[in-house]
Length: 313
Image (cartoon, rainbow, N blue to C red; front, side, top):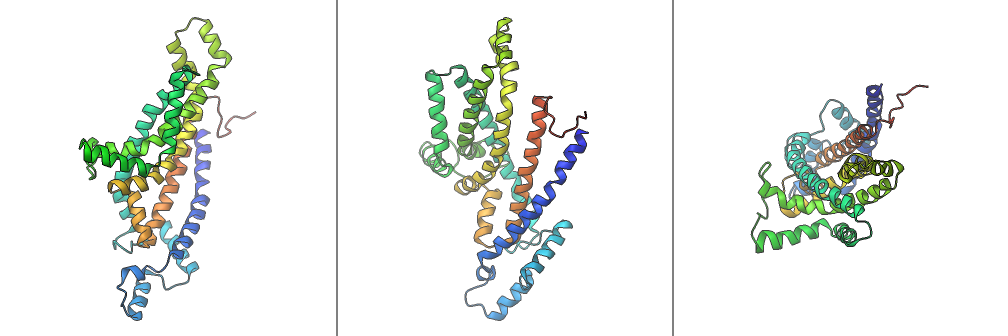
């Protein structure tokens, strides 16, 4: 029954993606004529018309959208105006770099944010708690582009510990600086939510009962407090996927990282409609799937949660 419920929720993604495709398709067309960027300024009108016909822009917008939707159903998102190859291939070539950056940044955020939140909650009202909250406020207030520029100036140039750019698959030297630039905001958010959630759970009766039975404090924290406190944290982590993808646009531009974030900036500036459409739709799909995964983690953390309404009276 859980599988049926999960499949039913996956089917609900289809109308969401259709709505996103409509909005993206028509908004991209408002940015102007790609021919103005692909052809020289002194190109004759006949050349411009020929290019528009070649790119399929000579039809009305509704006709263009129907053709686009028909292509998507058959796995064809159109050819990139700039690269002259399938737009989906262009995005998939850049996707591994962004996935690596996002994965490392998320691991750093979880490895630092959750322990900070737990320590702050256990030392509630003390100096450690105040220090963690101050760091969280600073982390949320610092824009990622500013953090990246500071990292380039002080770590990559003055100290010369790490390279200021370049990309090698899963190279720690190249990925650590962009990932540490992307992670501080998430660390701050995760630490604050973990602190608040742990404080709430610490006041529950089952925690007092566990302590009254003489169970070690470390065991109480790990088995009784942390597991129950993680549900709100999992929620905010799922929502941070959107920040990871949007923050990657700035971070990849600052560090010259060849991912989809940098590709998005270049495609918007070049009015490469097919690539922009693929980027938006795949990003939306990833975001929705991650939130479905978050729901499954809910059930794993607390089996009493019945997300798919599988129980019968």
